[in-house]
Length: 381
Image (cartoon, rainbow, N blue to C red; front, top):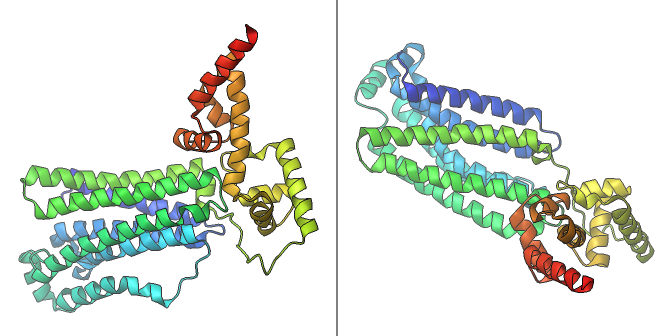
């Protein structure tokens, strides 16, 4: 079997995907459902790539077993639903999956049934005849399935982006800065998948010559390779990205605190914030803060909502902005940059810091720094 550059790249990508799956499943902790969904999602890409290799080198493949050929094509119908369900699991928190979710996989089952009846259940001679006549690409029903697959994925990608936007405010209840990173990477993958979908559509339906087609295949394969490595890199750099430390969210009416308990907790919370400054950690979550206080997470969430009138994200940012104002005032004299200050205060994104600062102060950090510097100059005159 003679392997070209693209074939070798595909083999490396498949190998990398399996390593990523092992990494994810070894880091399940309490977030096993999320990691399992992500593992299956990227495995579908491996099966699609692997099937392409089987078809391209079908002469060698049939020597092992011809029944492997064509099965991986249907896994494209799993990509959209799996990504959508992954986002639901992450954003809605503790969602119980039921039999209704299986409806998402009907197109995959239908395709699998067709490919089995048209190829796998045929005798050996018929299979060889079909392969010699460019099966499965020459089959009209496969062409129709490919068109359906592209539209199928585009619909789920759009639904996923809508779900991310709709759920963004709700999940700020439990997380602080770390949720920005989760949302960013989910959106990144969604947009990335849409771009790959567009490239695959071009490669399949637009004929600009063999070199153009080959280049697009290399780009899409490299893209999957990069995504797989990015997952590992982010998991190592931010371990909490694949661990679930969010609390079960009980109803307040079933776990209501008394007024005296609320007053005691809010006093304890403010004293802890002033003394220990936990908001300086960019990965601080509601569970982290509750553990530091020695109180149940649901109680902290309830106190923040009912006594402070803020969700967790807003409450933490209030302290971070106050700290940044203090440092910006000092920076007029010691020349600290705004970028240095935002990292020191617990932010890890300049755009998030600028938006939060303007929301709480009515001006940008740069304007605040200039105004403070001018005021200090007037006081020294």
